[in-house]
Amino acid sequence: MTNANNGVTVNIRSIIIVSLLSIAYLALSTFLIGYKPDELTLVVIFNVLFYASAITRKFILGFTIFIVYWIIFDYMKAFPNYNYNPVHIAQLYNAEKHLFGIHFNGKLLTPNEYWLANSNTFIDVVSGLFYLCWIPVPLGFAAYLFFKNKKQFLNFSLTFVLVNILGFIVYYTYPAAPPWFVQYHGFHFIPLTMGNTAGLARFDAFFHASIFKNIYTKGSNVFAAMPSLHSSYPVIVLYYGIKNRLGLVNIFFAAVTVGIWFTAVYASHHYVLDVLAGITCACLGITLYNVLLKKFSSLQSALNNYEKVIS
Image 1 (cartoon, rainbow, N blue to C red):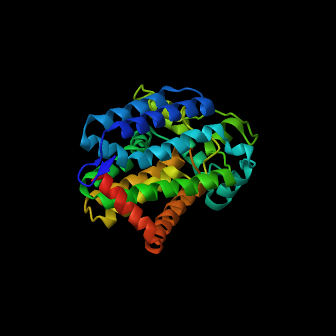
Image 2 (image 1 turned 180 degrees about the horizontal axis):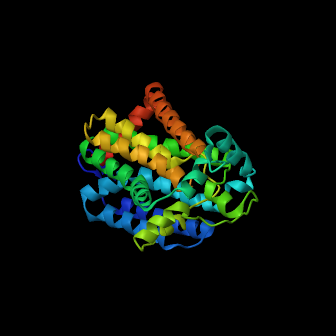
Image 3 (image 1 turned 90 degrees about the vertical axis):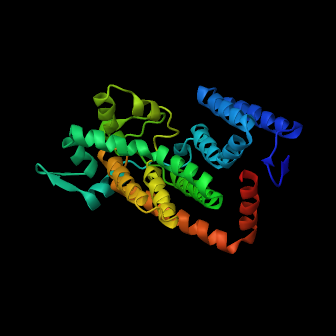
């Protein structure tokens, strides 16, 4: 199935493996969360790139790391975290107000409530543009590393997945409602609550589009605000950007990082506490990955072998 020069090759064995995995994924997805076009689209993209050429095959095999992350995230819909631990609503809200409360018009408000009362179109547009970066910037950076430095690509990708796993553990240990839930529903827990664009609806309204609406209708769990993984991702990108000495590009990464942090609070999707937890999660994941890489030679060996497959 592989050789030293071409990595994974297309033969009977690889065709059978890819076909079986594709069918198994679609069947399991339908069983767990019901049929959705997104799963079929993912399978089609994977198969097209796998069979199109040697370059696209190596590319999609490299990005399989991100596909695994997406599948885990998607399957969380079948196992809502509020089935395992109580959802924290008032506790988090009160802690946020106590630690970061802002006095405005004679009332003590959370930062989310303050910005809800003081939003404007310019900030709506700029913050929305920043928040749109949370997917394309990490993936675009990963694509750059894939073609520039395979080893750094693998390190970045695995760090990304590790940070997400840490975040998912907290999701299930400490289910938490986002600020907009309190704004719309108060402190009463309502299971099966659908995702909401909250303050980002103003961005959609300005452009007469449904960009964020389409994104948040696909969310896996409303009660997974702590930590803010949106706030974690740009930290990982900035860390590897600095590590790879990208110069002025890192200024862009830093701006996007701060912009996403601000928007998370401004648009009422996360508390400041959620953002801080996301930053902590990213730092912990980066540190843990580096420690594991140094302590376990088997991990380094596995990375070297995988690097050969996608090179």
